Image 1 (cartoon, rainbow over the protein chains, first blue to last red):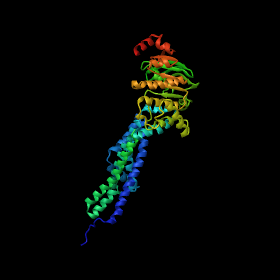
Image 2: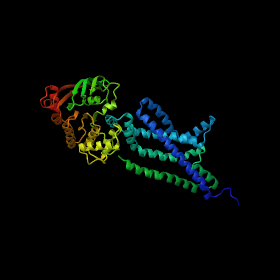
Image 3: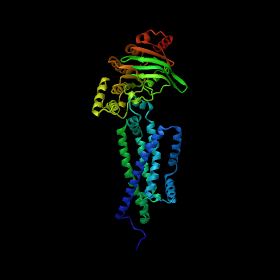
Length: 217
Length: 240
């Protein structure tokens, strides 16, 4: 008798690996872009006056407060409705990167602000220029102070990347959903997917703690 | 020579310096004493162009410190400054702390910068601490590091802003000894200080600041032991 469903087999590993790979790729893109933008925005926020901060702050508040899944759907539908639909990877990367940036900018801002003005004055009194002080003093001290928070955001981005499946990106969760609908073996597959996320995240957080100890000042 | 000419400086509505004039010659050590809020630290910040002034003029080797065309970063290379808070760079070893500015500001080679840094650290008695991180050291050691870090830039003048005020009492001595050594070597210094014994023994002249003006200035021993101005007498009777 022919079943509508075919059980999970080794031939599915290609699909699963594609999912794993796509999850890693979009996470790396979001973390790298989000970190770079967050560094810039965080620095500007630490440096600028109240008016600029209120402006920046309100945009960031929207990005942080609206659930990611809604941002993803709204963005991709909106861009699609404008007549230039983006590939799911592109749309997902943009939204996830901006979302990451919103959290990273706060992390970096607090890092920059953790370096006391008197420390900077001391550096300037040695003849360092403003930029030398930023590069050699403020940046390294501030980044060390916020490394644990940075890692926390990065790890949550890896997990949040599962939400990009709603706009059709074939990451790990989406491929597993397809497999589930074909095999009707949700338990095995979801446990497997959970383990994959764990395998990706755990070594990172473990390595992070090691780096944190090494950098402790 | 540092020449402060009729300098006025306000923070908002508060006038902190109300016409201060002071000449410090090469090789001279001048201590500045006075109550808190009398403007003595502000004067150092103005000499180093960390704070702008409202009126008057400050010349360092005939260069107008606050003129628009003056390169203040370059000027500060001549003026070593040490603060109440030592502000060691916590992410660098002691040696890196002292070698950083010579390397990036004076563009020395790494070897040259390290050689100078080592020399100055030995100078202040930190020759055994090169690879230690400053947060592992006492306040007195960190303050000596701050002095060595400033000296590594080969400044012509040292501006010292209450460098012992934040230290535990038992650590004050080692820092003052370092400053004594510098004075004996002929370093030109302006020391804002609450250490009257140090001011009396080490400096050539002492200036007493009161409410933004120099109320009395003269030969160190005379000002400390036999002040002429009643305000100075009152201040000294309180701090003793």
